[in-house]
Image 1 (cartoon, rainbow over the protein chains, first blue to last red):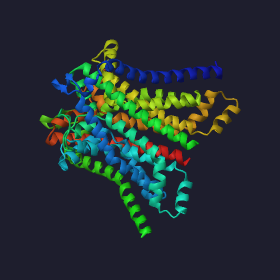
Image 2: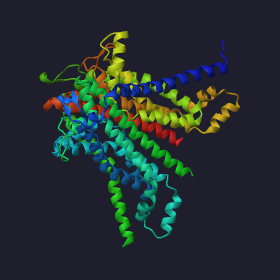
Image 3: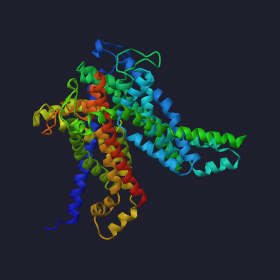
Image 4: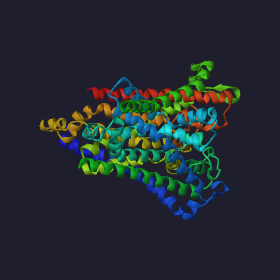
Length: 280
Length: 284
């Protein structure tokens, strides 16, 4: 028997809609679950206190600092490299074999799993360059990890700057470099910032690569780039897997999720404002 | 003076632009340098197909880890791919644009949830459910596959939505004008046209699933054994490296880097496949 196309359409739409709802429901459940269990434990004292008894009691202050410093360092390294690459790709060259190779390398780098970044950081930065498990090793490793994100978002932002801006600037006698840093980059800034925020979000949530390079020792607030740091994500992993304290694990998870969501939401907000301004 | 200054700037930018390729080569170089000599000395066949892993006896076979990675990745795709593609189709074809513009970024936001949190949810919520209803310890191939399936959803949905949105509207209008229902137009015309982009999204998601570490360590159970059912605990290649690295020295350490080499090659092949599929689309 042939089923009427309108029937199959109704059936298909129901199934597709159910799949979409299920996806959203699962993702919302994860966030609500973590916040529901964790938020009661997130107090000012928890955020600014030092851990006691390996994290069984006390707060997470040093790890919050670790989770701020490490992404900052990573971005300080990755931002100039990533934006520079994007500027070269968009402003200084046409499509050549070289640009194709650069894009290919960027895509490959984006697909490498974080555990491989961790292994590489361990042999190269930690051991070969004698940096030890440190803020610096971790920052450099994360910088390489987020480089593709920065390159891609910056390239898109640069391409979105209208060609006429460049033509006007060049017709007034500006060199290419003057055009880039006075005209193109300021106009592409919001797009670049979006990429930065997305990268920061990734750095905050990263665990495998950080454990191998920045260490996981509970060593207080770092005083130099060669001190080992433990980030919130690593701290949470240790709390959760070693069964140290489930109350503190939930609270740490809540802090982690909130900070990542806030950072990512800021990224999307900036991007939307950027797109809306471009549309006008 | 001026033109030469501009030329200098260009060379500086060229040098910077090589940073990504340089990093990639450096990573490949160091992973292979640490791992490849071991594979050659131990014998690639022995390394890949032996089930004996006992560093104290110098037995280094990673067959169970390879099987575990394959099972979990396939399981994750069985869950993530249909759900993700269905979501992408629904969002682009059957939902008003403004709703899609809110839902898609929301789903992408969730891509930012750290993998340790997904793993934690797997341990706290999913594993007890599986233990109670299906048996076993709950930490198993199944729970890892479900968690990874959820984790790759944003990747599949986001790239598939882009691919489906890129299909020209005239395709849909043509089908509708011939008397097709919306679903027929989607199934027979739009999905065919967006096929390569959707395929690329699934391959990229596979790459992510193979490489995921922390969530898998937490929910897969980590027993070195070739699984006979999806309810058994297993250890993937990624979990294997992460768990043993801190205590490993000498040959043991080299064997873990060799596992990294295998992982690196698998992920690179998946990436290359995704890129080829995407490029075919662009050429058409």
